[in-house]
Length: 403
Ligand SMILES: NC(=O)c1ccc[n+]([C@@H]2O[C@H](COP(=O)([O-])OP(=O)(O)OC[C@H]3O[C@@H](n4cnc5c(N)ncnc54)[C@H](OP(=O)(O)O)[C@@H]3O)[C@@H](O)[C@H]2O)c1
View 1 (cartoon, helix red, strand yellow):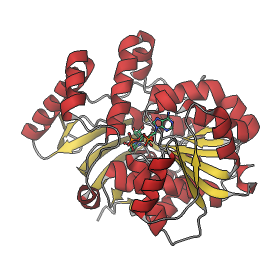
View 2 (view 1 turned 180 degrees about the horizontal axis):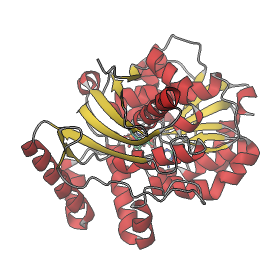
View 3 (view 1 turned 120 degrees about the horizontal axis):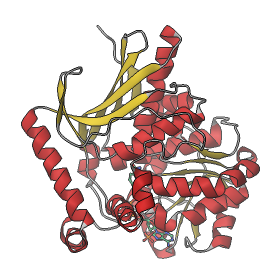
């Protein structure tokens, strides 16, 4: 089992990426427990530059994503691989394969449902045999959503013996920016979907990541426009990350043995101060999606507007970033429970760097001894990760008192 391995606790593959460098900074300053770790990437020169910039002296491994033997050797030296090498649909498979073949635990930052499905279909049984525990989506997508729902459902079951039948997640505040890598991943999903009608169909299925034979058929709400929610008394608008987060939450339900129930309804949206903001933001998002789907406009966006690979929000934007997500649960008896997830940095980078690191340390050190295979954060790390995030990562998952 991976936990019994000697060598490093963590190897950070993609240490030179925009988010990888923030993870290096976090690990360099991290004194809460002893961590042995190494950096890995395809360019030795860039790895050395990152070390000099961050002021660290950790070992490094040079390996390209197309070097299967090199990736295998990298995996054999560590309990857990954290990988930021993306878009995952382009460069991620060889790392998954190496971890599966060597029984090494793995965390990633993918938000690409079509790629997760391909990896699960192809490697799940081999991972079960080797004992490799692979946890996808251990960044802003989808840890806050996945753990917020899990925590609310655990409270609901403790209080009434039954899970909430419906949870609505509303983003109340969010401040941060996007990086070139995230933009590249989003554009790649759109490109793949444009070419493949089967994929387009799969992507609109909220249960696309649930294991075959799952019992779910309830129609789920999909926020496409600005709307007024009478129950919550607020304007809402679409939330870009909903399409991955909602699918991860339903996969967690399946992997947790239907803990949330067979008829569980879940949807995500952003709350807006008023109708005008909701309408204008929805229009802007719609225009961006249309432009990103039309080749000449997409090329112009990539060239002149969007951040390039390696670029992202400034240090100041990361430090001043924040998010506040609210989970409104309705119980079978009509009672309500509210849970909040608060993060103290920009969601995609400052906070994501801390979340993936803590997910990796949870796998390395917290006796998460379970069957190998592909897991979600909530289905494998749940309460242990909630505790770690509160203690070491500035992410709070807690009930909102009704007083
Ligand atoms: N889930 C979340 O909340 C979240 C948040 C942030 C980012 N992300 C995802 O994380 C990933 C990284 O984002 P980013 O903005 O940090 O990306 P980025 O700066 O563009 O970095 C991409 C990384 O991939 C490496 N790479 C590319 N091709 C490679 C190959 N053939 N072999 C080995 N390494 C290769 C690059 O190495 P070089 O430096 O040598 O070019 C670089 O380290 C993206 O997929 C993004 O969508 C997710």
